[in-house]
Image 1 (spheres, rainbow, N blue to C red):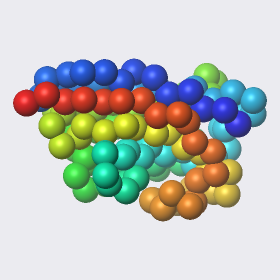
Image 2 (cartoon, rainbow, N blue to C red):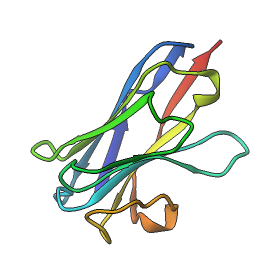
Image 3 (cartoon, helix red, strand yellow):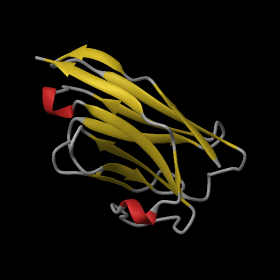
Length: 125
């Protein structure tokens, strides 16, 4: 599976961005997909995850109510809509697929086996 993330950029605090992650090489419609982020000098952290059919979503507390994860299995793509962005959201954002699971709350990086290359999100104050 190859994952290509896009949609990052520079935005002012309070603004919005929509990240996309397109999978190729294999259909991912049966698997949990997630978004993580990593700021300089920090560990990669969980942001959001979605079950195989989009029926269940999970969010880190610090983004709950501001970010929305969704997926389009026909396009083999997962999205992350980010609203009311804050400077502390500045990070490289990574999408990931877990072929181990179809449902469930999976927030550890070790639970995901395919990763995209990351897209930079910078929020200015």
